[in-house]
Image (cartoon, rainbow, N blue to C red; front, side, top):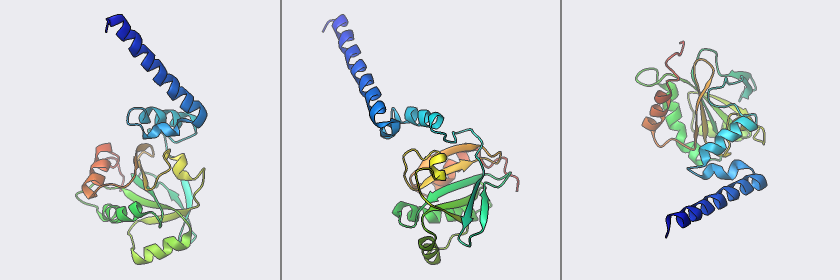
Length: 202
């Protein structure tokens, strides 16, 4: 194939691909692109800036949610790095991840020091029933799931559980993680890599 014809062919393919992406976004919005390893980060960047999401690097607005006793709590605590984990009692991967989060919450030596807060997107009673069977050593709050719950505002563009957000001691969002962590070392590496706990004021 001649070079000019090859360039024309490549240009046609790229233009068709670009038009397909534009048409998909126009018809269905950018969320479908989140599954793409190449276009996912671009779609996430766009959603962060056009849907009122708290973007990476932005201050996390304080969340005020009730615990299982009905007491209103504020997250995050000033001056504390915080891992906010969204979960539900019916979510198998969430349940599997709980011991990892519990171990991180209980550890004060040999691991990054962070507050761990679980926000159950669930009804209070199933959460109570679950915690009676599998208690944890971190704070658990409850929120009604919906189109504008705090997980969506914090960047859960894929609308999956579990979903984790790491907030630095300075109150800014450092990182987000979709799905469960594979094991304790993966969770600790994720927290340590961000440096979120380096300025924690204990």
